[in-house]
Length: 127
Image (cartoon, rainbow, N blue to C red; front, side):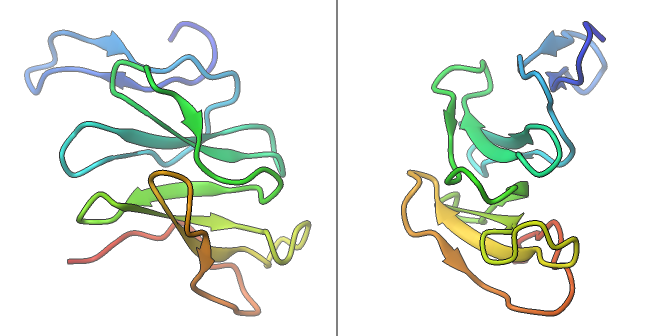
């Protein structure tokens, strides 16, 4: 709808369809913060993807992840203070080199959680 892939929201009954994002290369998984105040998704061409955080009206948009990690598949923590995601910071260019990282919603505290010989892809938080 409207060209490139974008995020849309609507009411449970299907009414009120509204486009949220305006990205040039929106990718797959996106997530809402537990309080509904923020959204995360990832954008970019292959091997040049980054995670972005923004308000549901697409204001306060900013890149959350450091550039150069091919970051993707973000997920908010249950307390809304962290985002988990997949990236290749330590094994860039290796198809099986993706690891799971976390970062605070303010962009600080980047930390790798896994280190395996296979791709740890699209993490989700459990309760």
